[in-house]
Image 1 (cartoon, rainbow, N blue to C red):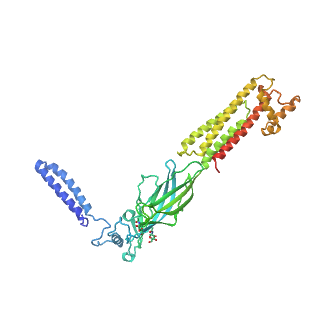
Image 2: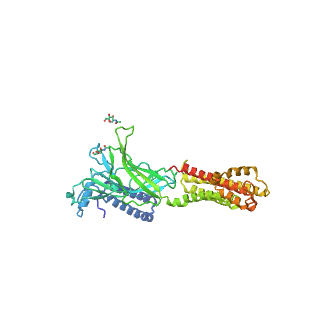
Image 3: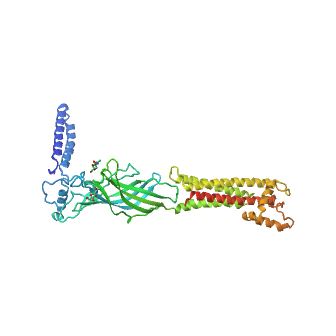
Length: 464
Ligand SMILES: *[C@@H]1O[C@H](CO)[C@@H](O)[C@H](O)[C@H]1NC(C)=O
Ligand SMILES: *[C@@H]1O[C@H](CO)[C@@H](O)[C@H](O)[C@H]1NC(C)=O
């Protein structure tokens, strides 16, 4: 059952253990005479020991052959000969001063960007090739086998690792994957790797933001004189790339950076640096956030064209304020933490909220003045300020700018008696026509002022 082709040491050890156990049982037996219990315990333990014996006795693959079995194929022979005395911890060069040149190419599959934790996860297949001086054979000796498939765990692999990891809990090293070896010692491995690149993004221009994320890969232990890094062609391929729903990949650049540190001027440290430029797909956010802010601005400005004494005007302003507050809350929850840099869209809502608040104050002031004006005796002369303002407004160019010219002209031919509009005519609702003109003119003036305020705010916040 157990053919004897394994490690002798292990088998001798198990044999000794076996004898010790037997002696211990014998001792116990002499002391206590618990014969039936001993027997029942002893049998399973012996079976387990026999199984361990067998498993140790079965030879491990990849060891040097001692004799050729009958059904062994050229493939078996090749694996046994190639891996005879192979040590995967030894850098596979003949001369120690030689380097192993690892040529890499990143096949970018897709990526995701974890904005809250500033980590860009890049899912790739990384093709690596290098030459292993100890994995060579001549195919004619082995039934013309010209390619060998082995597990990445069984051979020496350049210890490439990410330098700017955004998640240090992710272990370094390659997962299980197969490598291909060619007779000239060339090894090709294409492990599938998810790189967690740290990428601190600034969301100032959210949702029209664009970010530059880097992925730096290099040997963890070796300098360039031991393990050199090169890129094949461009160093990356986007042939199988699947577009992200959230981000657009604008550009990828790849280059090998060679650094030299002060400590070791004779050593170089090459690393492959990939730069990804990504841009957010903004159309959804433009529809849900940017357009509403513009509508709210328009709503606030339109209130200045409503009669000052209309109570609905105040309601419109207040609705606008409530909407602003709701949106600010939404943005606060939606946007990732951004340090000291407040996103422009939040500043925009904040500025708009302040202007809206000013519009409410303005409306309240005009409303109260209207009430006061209406309370005055009809037919009495206008107040001093009112008449002063009317004098100014009456100047044709000012009247034209403030769009109140028609109010003067309407009143003029109505009775034919009053050319002087500063004199009082009775308007609807008990308001004097003078006050009507003044309040309308002031409203239009406020409209201009607030429009300019909005424009200044926009210009200040949006640099280009
Ligand atoms: C590694 O070896 C190659 C070829 O032998 C050589 O061209 C290259 O300069 C070496 N790299 C370093 C960093 O020494
Ligand atoms: C670097 O190389 C030079 C000349 O080869 C040698 O004199 C010097 O000692 C080396 N420096 C270090 C830090 O090994």
